[in-house]
Amino acid sequence: MPRRCDGLQQARALAEGGGLLDATITVGQAFGGDHEAVNVYSGLLAAKAAFGADVAIVGQGPGNVGTETEWGFGSIAQGDHINAAGVLGGLPIRVPRISFADPDRAPRVSSQTLVVLGQVALVRAAVSVPAMAEERLALVHQQLDDAGVTARHDVLVVDGGTGLEVLDERGIEARSMGRTPTEDPEFFWPRARRARWRRRRLMDDALRERLLSLPDCVRGRLLTLRVDEVELPNGRKATRETVLHPGLW
Image 1 (spheres, one colour):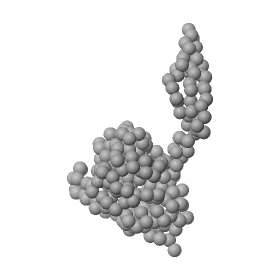
Image 2: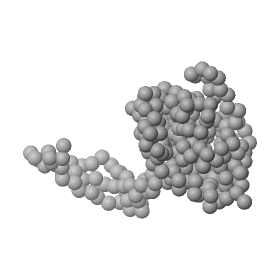
Image 3: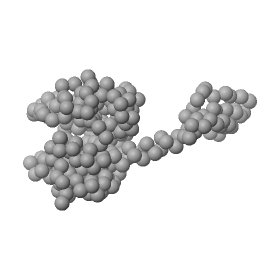
Image 4: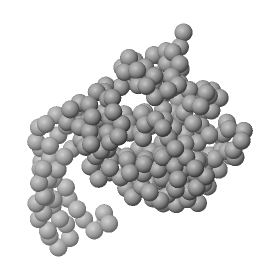
């Protein structure tokens, strides 16, 4: 029988038990993690130093406060989380809150998401949007465009079904506000997609060569020979010789 995942503590327990989460770090006024840090910046650094983390999931924790004003909501801290990840040299990935299942609200990207991405986050982030019906996707894009999100960040549209399949394999039934992925797929798909996309990015990084020094260049009247010393993914060093000519620009 699938294990339901509703609250934050239950989600943490199921993720750790299912091999999806290695450790938890609480920061600031939060407490009770495997380790504790002063703020989000030191928390991210601790994740790397103490656990060798490739991926860190950052959230503002329980007790989310909201008002009917543009700036009065607790999750505005997510903008600061994006900035922290970028300042420290990481790749911020933001999951927008998208829902078409709430009968009391117009189908939309949440106004809080638009404020966080359109005004608070000063660092460029990858914004994961799930593939969905064409008319729904057009509405989402229009909202992101109007709020200035598309101009400030990299909006990615891809399928997130694989991440949900991983939860199914581990017998974890995800829920949010009492709804399942079947009842509100646009809410869950971006989160599943973030994990899948980050894994692909890590694989790409593992195959990337690292430049070890400034290139040596020999310039002629027409051609330029550039010599780079690089480090290969396996740690060995190599030399790359590239001929540049005006037709490249």
